[in-house]
Amino acid sequence: MSPTRSSRSLVIVAIVLAAVLITVVTLLASRPDAPPVSTASPAVPAPPSIPADVPKETNAITWHDQPLPGPLATVFQDAAGADTTLAAFAGKVLVVNFWATWCAPCIKEMPTLDALQAKLGGPQFQVLAISQDREGAKVARPFIEKNGWTNIALYVEPKARFAQEAKLRGLPTTLVLDKAGREVGRLEGTIDWADAAVVEQLQRLIAQPG
Image 1 (cartoon, rainbow, N blue to C red):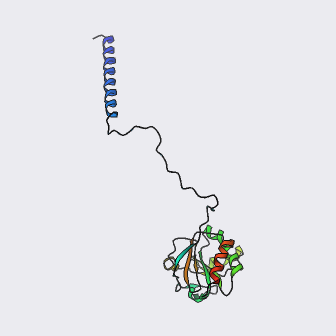
Image 2: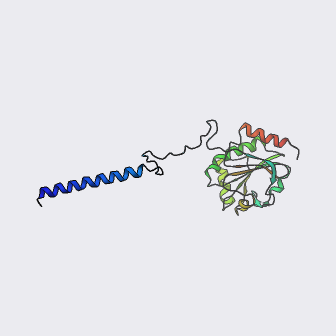
Image 3: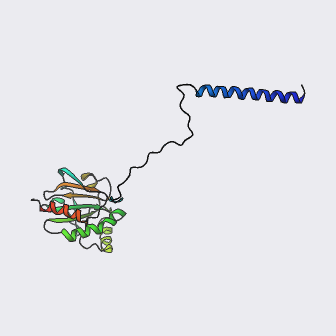
């Protein structure tokens, strides 16, 4: 066979194969159960929108429909190193904040807790900021002094007892206890505790009989 005839034969064979392939693809695509072919990118769900007037890094206090038992028996230490419990503060509305020196959101929130204690602190109200640092007062005391938080007292609990007994899922977490030591509110995250609306909510709680 001459080279010319051989080349022609190869071309014819290629054309026939191409025609068969096109026919097979066409028949498969025309089947009723065949999935539609699309070159478009798959749709990606849009993230939920956040209202413009809601601060992106601020959570809200969750006020319970019914008071919950507070972790009144959990032992922690005061500035002098003496053991104490939340039960020792009976008769006061408490804002109990769990924080640590390594927790950036805690540090950002702390000045507002210090301001809250300055505004409402007294016989019927107290902010208890309880450090969860494993080194206890050794690191918490100089940290508080360095930052100039002069209204909140030093409290530490280096053994992480509250993690279980107060069901902490992370830091910062804040419990709001009524005068009977019951948990009436909880915040996981941060807020501006000096905000007028927050102060008003706490003042209403303070005004309630013990």
